[in-house]
Image 1 (cartoon, rainbow, N blue to C red):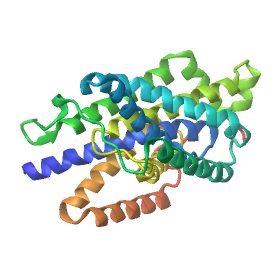
Image 2: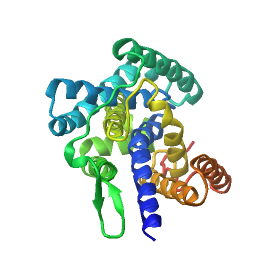
Image 3: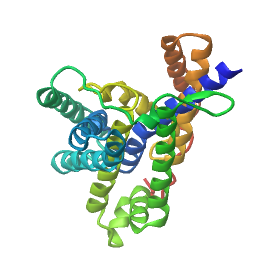
Image 4: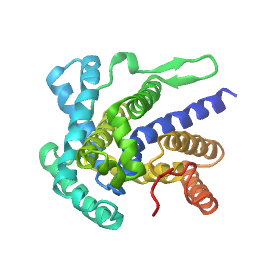
Length: 294
């Protein structure tokens, strides 16, 4: 029973990682129709930000809490530059954005190799995140528990932003009907840039979190970008609540399969399950409600 409980928490932990990686994609893809294949490299940039901050600060505990907002700013800044230079010309042209951002991703990977070198680098975890935490029913990794709490905090913060702020109302208006939002005085251009900044910044936070689980290298983001897109599509394009359900659902599903098979077979089984689900419900768990007539 304890082994199954530990495996169940491993599923929640995997779901929290997928959620952090997918939140920004759900935000930008839902509003602008942009398939950002460089999102994984924004995750990588957040991880390298944690490495640089730790080199400057020294103390692992302090550097972690400095790295989270720093990773958000670095990821957000990269997103704004990408949006301002290339993507704003390609809204709702997903195939074009896929090709362009794939090229940008390769450039960013090579830039990381040139700056930090080809071998992976390690970011030291704080002492209070080493070892396991006894929850009574299972022994769980302290680092993974921290990532789960961070993911929940990110979802809550994003939910408050979208529901209780003027920027959130502008974002929701732009998603529902961009042309109508412009006619009532909303600067959709500014809204798009702010949305891309937030979405890319969340990728940077995900990168900081991933440094607690392993080493950081130029291809770190490519290990998560496909799974992140699976979460976004299964949850429903642009649906944050669907993204949450899909992330934890896929994480638990993979952990359940791994309990009786292997990690490779579990990943294949999850992919097959997503394909079957999308055949039955192609719009995902939730669909976008819009006032658009087209």
